[in-house]
Image 1 (cartoon, one colour):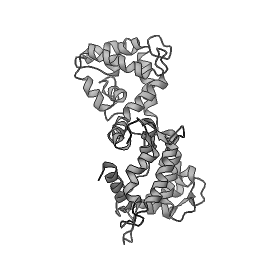
Image 2 (cartoon, helix red, strand yellow):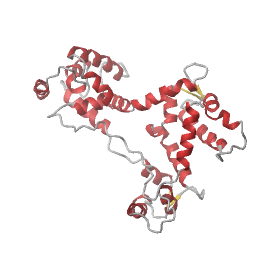
Image 3 (cartoon, helix red, strand yellow):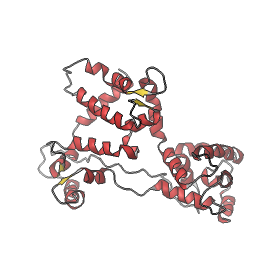
Image 4 (cartoon, one colour):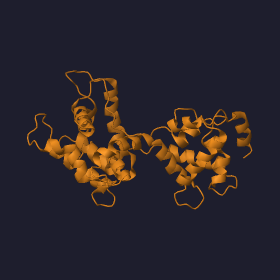
Amino acid sequence: MSTQQLLLCLSLWAACVGAKPTEKKERVHHEAQLSDKVHDDAQSFDYDHDAFLGADEAKTFDQLTPEESKERLGVIVDKIDTDKDGLVTEGELRAWIKKAQKKYVYESVERQWQEFDLNQDGFISWDEYRNVTYGTYLDDPDPDDGFNYKQMMVRDERRFKKADRDGDLTATKEEFTAFLHPEEYDYMKDIVVQETMEDIDKNGDGFIDLEEYIGDMYSHDGDTDEPEWVKTEREQFVEFRDKNRDGKMDKEETKDWILPSDYDHAEAEARHLVYESDQNKDGKLTKEEIVEKYDLFVGSQATDFGEALVRHDEF
């Protein structure tokens, strides 16, 4: 059995296992914190290092000399400066930070890429994905496990076409990432909402009513008394989820529920890094300004934090 077929089986199993009476199924996609460390520059720049590089990559800089750290940081700056004008804006920094935080997503895609890119042309077509994922299942018109693979394939094809921005039914690595992890991409949010509603909307009326909402996250399983968290969820539905008080959630209400407008940690960190490093106060950073503050961005093995704070306060 291939890796993808194994993953498909596991996802099918997970989809069919009902929630235990005391467990809550989590549908909401929250933006993750940039670091588990406290953001206190008076104590250390560890939070900034994790935010800028990702926690795993930040650790590698702890083994470098200041000279090595500056050299590697200079290379990173060239990548951040996407328009190649020699200046790094808050927007470019924000995009870089978000990409650094999604490194685990890209690594997951890299692990699967070769299995799907059958002709090794650097792209994955819908036909390649369909054949690898569903080929053996579609050969059997009446599978013993009871799953409707054709219906699942139709759903996957719809998502693949949404991720495929140029409409050529061939995915670049970035488009394939959006296909596998749609919650990470703004232009894929509608498909996340649509799939969620299809999962929960059992009567097929295009809405999610209170009982469907509760039924998705809790199974009575013979119990007469609901746990307190279920009662709280009922109140949440009535008071906050169902904004127009019509007894059900439409597409926009569902989107507000599962994709809340969280605080943008990447934007806040980008603004902070520019403020701390922008010597001429023009709102943009040169490579020299960033490398000068390498201890804030990446650190090194030999960084003396007391000395770093002195230079930090000079600005």
